Length: 194
Image 1 (cartoon, helix red, strand yellow):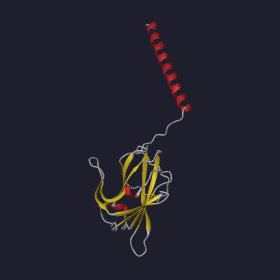
Image 2 (tube, rainbow, N blue to C red; image 1 turned 180 degrees about the vertical axis):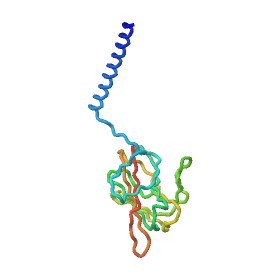
Image 3 (cartoon, rainbow, N blue to C red; image 1 turned 90 degrees about the vertical axis):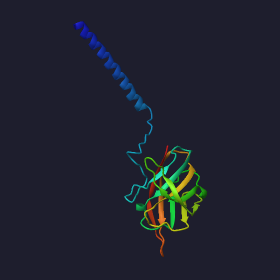
């Protein structure tokens, strides 16, 4: 019986030592190899503008892969608008190196998607789009003022994604109609490219 117990203890000791050696090897390998960043968008959102005035806006994009053709819906919901919109300015960060063209933008009354439906345009709104020479912003001039009603609107952008991955904070500023037009910050869309 003692001989049998000694045999079991030897097997347990060998297994324990093997596991310890493999575990040590993996720990040492982790210390010497560069770690890759991992993103989990459902738990945490990183943004460059960390002031209390930051307001997250809803968006939808068809592809998150770099250099892939993608359609973006930059959504402006009723709760995002306090007044009508005469002009909309969308600012892109310097490192968002996609080619922006006026013909790739549209403004529409949108219907938000859910688990079973996609976000889509219900009715297009005639709009003139102007892209800055340095492509740092796009200005939208709707033919009619976007009212402060209970409808949802979206700027639709069809582009090839940037050729570098990262997170991009895209800001929206709206100019209200009136004798003294005032530009106010609406919010930001934080876009992620893998």
